[in-house]
Length: 576
Ligand SMILES: *[C@@H]1O[C@H](CO)[C@@H](O)[C@H](O)[C@H]1NC(C)=O
Ligand SMILES: *[C@@H]1O[C@H](CO)[C@@H](O)[C@H](O)[C@H]1NC(C)=O
Ligand SMILES: *[C@@H]1O[C@H](CO)[C@@H](O)[C@H](O)[C@H]1NC(C)=O
Ligand SMILES: *[C@@H]1O[C@H](CO)[C@@H](O)[C@H](O)[C@H]1NC(C)=O
Ligand SMILES: *[C@@H]1O[C@H](CO)[C@@H](O)[C@H](O)[C@H]1NC(C)=O
Ligand SMILES: *[C@@H]1O[C@H](CO)[C@@H](O)[C@H](O)[C@H]1NC(C)=O
Ligand SMILES: *[C@@H]1O[C@H](CO)[C@@H](O)[C@H](O)[C@H]1NC(C)=O
Ligand SMILES: *[C@@H]1O[C@H](CO)[C@@H](O)[C@H](O)[C@H]1NC(C)=O
Image (cartoon, rainbow, N blue to C red; front, side, top):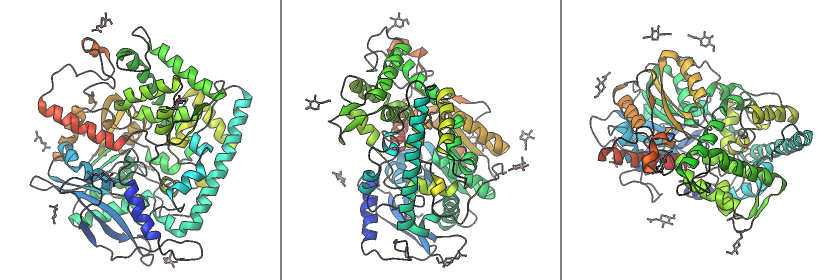
């Protein structure tokens, strides 16, 4: 996920805080100024943006159901079509919730056009509450204040799960930890209610979806169709678009699919039986590929005779030992202790991004040798600066009665036992919990239906082993949309198809955006190479190496380089 735009975003937002005044008895957020419908473009302040990229904003209604509520300023980034005839705007969203679409469009717009076609204007936007969009989510006075609030609590260091799941003291310890987690969520959201008040109501996906509809009219006219390309959480926006505005759907691709129905209608602690159904698969592939690559390519392999099981056993023994004996890490950027919970957070981040597996193996091998600085630094690299993710998920999620800590932990133990050892890890790396304490009610919460008939079919892309957004979620969404969708599979581990560069996925994507061509039913793409360097003569057996034996044309080489660059932007390092 993208880290770009974070520091500039904060300077900007802190500027807006100067001269605070109380809008009402609790909130201290200045109202945004501007006339609804204004679109302003200028140059971008971020010096990593492309020549020709533009930054700006659109003024939209703060509340689509209350014209007296004021306005919101949606931060925009644009990279114009470089070929004619122009096909219109293509909105992109890199996920999170929390990542900046402005950054994706203005830094990588040219590379994105290589995939979708040069006739599209690439339009990035920071969704409500995120990045440069105003109002921003600023529950805490500074990002540092939020970091200090969570430091070394369970919502920073994760849950420590003992190796013996049947041990009653393990369950008892987890319930105690869950009581802390609940109290921390309650405290954070109380702070949020005090500092942000009603401004928090407008950050849900239903509102974001109306923004995309509204901005399509502003940029392309009232008859224009909506074109959208979303990854991970961006697939939630894509599904809301398809179901809230089915008659306006032009070309929409969702890649790395979250089941929006569960996102809106089920309490977060019940998501993970299905949502983590590919996580163990990705973890296993890591060890298989590491063993195949051997010590020259994978630092966790000690000899060419090491099997996947040998490497796996050493890693798991080390993580389990951390449960009893956390490792001091005096040399990390933020010194601390490597706990088993933090080690799991490291792994769930690493599994998302196979192109980074050789580095992840090096970092973890160093930790096993006594220096966990790189592992700690990766775990501490956080994309969120405040509660911008909760501001989305808690405005989206239907209200539920407060689950008892015992119920949350018993469900989690079921997942740990039968689905994946990362069951409790995900609740920290993807923080969507505690919504029972969310202090506001949004103007609208879209809860379905999810089976609309769209004007044009959308394209759904899932990886066979995505640790965060499994292929089963892609299948659920495809089944609900029926003929309003087509399903394309990438045979690779990792989060979203950009986790493993595939010219096949790129060609299918380009054909779809060109004229709506859908992949043949049952199409399974292969990535062009596996995550680790392979011994050349033996590459055919490696996971994901199918197709790599065929020599690539140089234009394919260039496309692959672009795909890897975009993947690094979308996935970032140490995704959290
Ligand atoms: C871009 O800005 C950053 C800080 O804002 C600075 O460290 C970096 O040197 C700049 N890069 C260029 C190429 O100007
Ligand atoms: C992008 O296109 C718009 C017209 O659609 C034009 O006004 C603007 O100047 C263009 N931007 C650049 C950088 O060429
Ligand atoms: C509309 O917004 C205004 C200004 O915030 C507020 O006073 C009013 O109560 C709102 N109306 C409704 C129906 O929510
Ligand atoms: C920390 O760095 C110091 C100085 O480079 C080194 O002597 C020490 O071994 C390091 N400690 C660990 C645990 O890596
Ligand atoms: C769509 O889903 C709703 C439930 O949300 C169901 O009542 C309806 O029959 C479904 N429509 C179709 C065409 O499947
Ligand atoms: C979907 O399309 C197929 C083939 O065009 C058709 O046979 C089928 O009836 C359609 N199903 C629905 C629910 O429209
Ligand atoms: C889409 O474009 C491709 C390549 O230009 C062409 O082969 C195909 O027939 C077109 N399909 C449609 C439905 O227009
Ligand atoms: C390839 O694998 C085979 C058996 O799996 C082994 O005998 C051979 O030495 C390997 N070749 C290289 C170049 O690593």
